[in-house]
Structure formats: C-alpha cells, structure tokens
Length: 320
Image 1 (tube, rainbow, N blue to C red):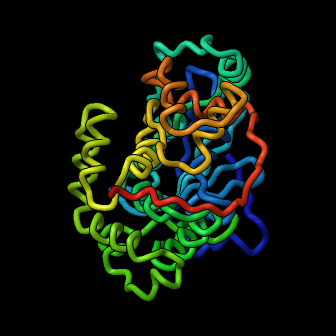
Image 2: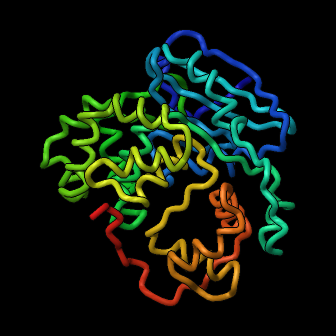
C-alpha cells in the first residue's frame, strides 16, 4: 500500500520503524467514508484527516501511539499503521469499519425515505473506535456550543497536549492526551481554548476516574446499562452519553436527545414538519434497537429542513 503526503508535511524523523500493513475484506458492503469519516470533528481535527481518498487517524493504544491510514478499494480496505501501537491499531480496523455492527432485525420498510436511503446507502456501518474517554471528552467539549466553537477547542487542546502522531501524515496530527494530562490542564488554558468552566470541570472530574469509567462502560452489557454508567457522572446527561456511545461503541440505538437541530431534522424528514424530542422519539419508536441507524440514513438521504432562524442557538446538554 503506497500513500503519499504533501511535500514538506512528512516528517521522516517522526516515523517509528517500518510501517505495518494489512488488508481488511468485509463480508458486507462498506462505505468507508460514511462509516469512518463521520468520526472527524471538523476539517481541522488533529486526530482525523481525510485527504486524497485516505482516512488518517492518530490514536493511543495499550502498546503506545499509532497512526492508522485507511484506503478503500472496490472490495477491500487497505490499512497501514506506524508507531509502537501499529499492531494494536491494525487489530481495530474491522471494528472501526463496522464489523461488529449487527443490523439483524432492522426493517427500513416502515417509511419510504428510510427504505430508499437504506437501499441507496447499503455500505453505511456504525464505526466503533473503543476510545471511550476520548469520545467522552470530545462530547463534553461540544456541550452548549456551536460545532465551530467545539471543533476549535478540540483542535487547540489536542494539538497542545496530545502526542504527535508518527508516520508520513498529510499534516501534523496528534492523538488525544491520556487521562493524566486532561486532569492537569490549567484553568487559563481551558479559557483560552474557549471551554467554559462547567465543561472543563466535568472533563477534569471524569479524567480523575478515567480508567474506572472505561472499564465500567465496556463491562456494561447493553446500551441502557452504558447510559446509566455515563449519566451517573456529574455533568453528563443523555446527550453527552449518546454522543460518546455512538463514537466509541457504535451503539445502534443511541439517540442524542437534547440536540438543538436533531429533532427538527427528523420530524421534517419523516413528516414534513419539525417536532420536539418527544415527537422524535415517537417517530423513531418503530425502529427501537436501531434508532441510530435510522438517524444515519436520514442524514445520508440529504433531506434537511430549510433554515428559518439564527444559526447560533446554544443549548445546555449537561445533566441538571
């Protein structure tokens, strides 16, 4: 597998050893960019870069830091990894590409838009990163602010406190910092990043229990059990829990209740008019167990409610 970086961007001194390679051959249709690309938090995300058809991810593994590059062919995913965590990174490729996503019992025929999207986008799978704390920290940063604000804060903090990713990345990339670093970030740096005190304190408190949180979430048997674990933490409500489970665990039923736009979009797509959270949950009820799958298909359909109000309308997603 050959991948080239922009001139001057590849830093040979940061390449740790020879790259490791593997080929993943999914037994199901796979749209790599709609499956893994959705993990990117804005175009300047330092942990995920999409360039020239390649998805690059910087990650931390039990064996150390790693960079993973994924390129899709007609029926395969070519994966290359660099760094001490390269083998661990390659072992995650099937789950990252949705191998654990089980659509058994999902019937899209209950609504023509969902049925059409399911037919046209058979390659959409639910990715699983297994990076529980990273997903939690990112979701907390995204509470109560616009995407642009959240993505800027994530970029600032990860680029400053994360670890530089090895390999010939298209631009400098960084893996998110470990728990010990998150809990030591000073208050003035959070402020400079644009993260308000309620969110920064929530991340610091969670980081103090980072290992136990990750163990408890992974040990929980169902989405409801994981929801109870996450929402038992101060400052973590249903929205943050759902966003964490979607990214880290590929939860097929997670719904981000409390999102400013989501209920409006679901209502418009399925009925032609906006609704609230209760109305959204009622509309999604026929697909219980697969509600996140339906939300992904609604997004892929391209149907969106016309904007009729100001773009900036922050809402507090923290528990009360």
